[in-house]
Length: 283
Ligand SMILES: NC(=O)c1ccc[n+]([C@@H]2O[C@H](COP(=O)([O-])OP(=O)(O)OC[C@H]3O[C@@H](n4cnc5c(N)ncnc54)[C@H](O)[C@@H]3O)[C@@H](O)[C@H]2O)c1
Image (tube, rainbow, N blue to C red; front, side, top):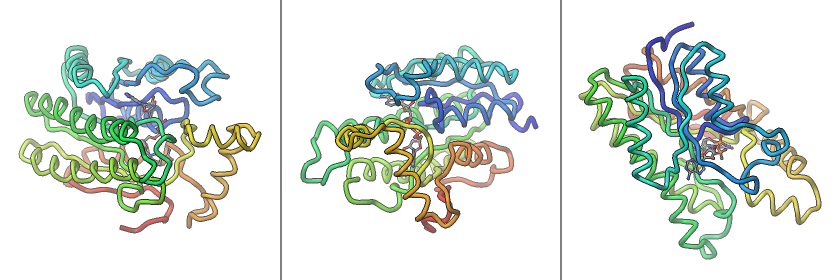
């Protein structure tokens, strides 16, 4: 299937071995798109243990996988806390490929340090979550949106939000607030960019089996004397029981929705926030 043949996509935070970013990059490439993938360089202490154990190659590995599908891939290290790096990234993509059709704002702040009552939440953690989960989505939208307008081919901007963008939980003030902001940004950007044929939508996943690192889960595993993988398996099993479809999402479930929103078939859809949550939440 080559529904995206000739298109160029930029996917942020795509270096995780089982993450939504990698699954999305591969899905878009399998449909014919050339892809730029970004991530931050993380030390072993900030990586999921499985990625350290297997010496996973991050965005370079994903680039290899995209190329093996016969598509071009540009891996770029970009710290989304730095506005200048975001602008440089978008410029590099357009220089390399001559166009930019699809932006997927997927990266997020590494979770865990935010998981405290609001009265215990540090200003530093709050600011970091806002910087990566909200402000960087704005800056990427601005930089990529400007290029899409200039190039005149229309475009697709897809923001990975969350269940937590619609329904907050206890210990989730920074994460939820940063993801609620993404919904507002999605709606306003959709209106601003509609005259240019650029759609802007959000995807709201529930729990995903993405293999991501959580500092909170790591501390809990240490306290309980179990491996992080074992703790995570228990959390996923409990979460699965609460989900009508009986399992948490795989990263590919989310990537499938992104690919649809990136396609020509989704050309009349903008400003929406689609749930991919196994029936957990309806609004
Ligand atoms: N995993 C879940 O259960 C879940 C649930 C709902 C929504 N989501 C959303 O789905 C998306 C993907 O989730 P995931 O679990 O694959 O993500 P993840 O936690 O593995 O993080 C995605 C990527 O963001 C990158 N990143 C972190 N800080 C960065 C920075 N400063 N600059 C650039 N990149 C940075 C990480 O290196 C990582 O590769 C996120 O937006 C997340 O909020 C995830």
